[in-house]
Image (cartoon, rainbow, N blue to C red):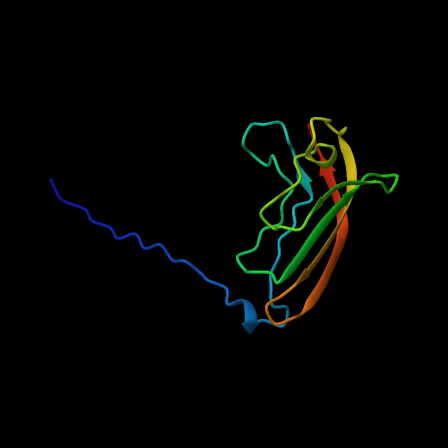
Length: 116
């Protein structure tokens, strides 16, 4: 019998945050399912970069704020201000404001879908 060999190479791509026109690439999901299955249980932006300032606010369809965070590590769990009160499925609105290390201010607005 013959012998086969192969080489597997993992390549890690690192984005240098200050080398692009917009210093931070932030990926914001448009749907999440806080059903405690450990998959998409939090609405949270994704970024590998650091922020000087950060604020995420979530609003219901009547404009009432249901969540607010000053930390990119704290996401929304689908409850009213992270209490025990589950909020219903539906469309919610987010406002994300952050400042990069280079003092570039960014404002992102959009909708997200909460599924249970």
